[in-house]
Length: 144
Image 1 (cartoon, rainbow, N blue to C red):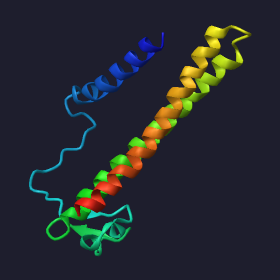
Image 2: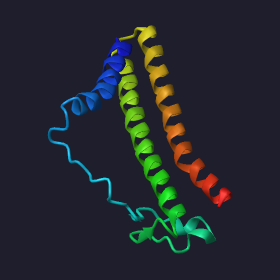
Image 3: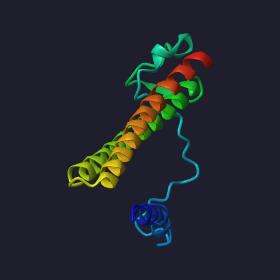
Image 4: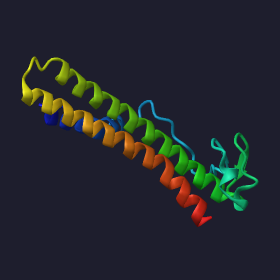
């Protein structure tokens, strides 16, 4: 049952952008090809990652010509933040499903075991979320 729900959700996730693009540009903004993006806004405190990032303070505007590394690392950290919160939310939902199975087991040991499995998976998901938050920051400090 869960596999079918996940499969349909993923299918909808991948097909939704195609449905928007298939409308032939109606409602979409056409960007002229002569526009060049030359700056980015720093959303993270990147300057704590090392000496190379001292000019990259949170809230500042960085130039791609001189501070492209700041923009790249900021984009990577933004993606990691989104991924972290998605993992946390999904893990919390799985934790709730496991708790629901245990609470509604009514003495059925199979349902209790299934609930414990869900809770174990949720704890593993939270641990992975924390690792996805910490490890890239450590790698960026080592590389730069």
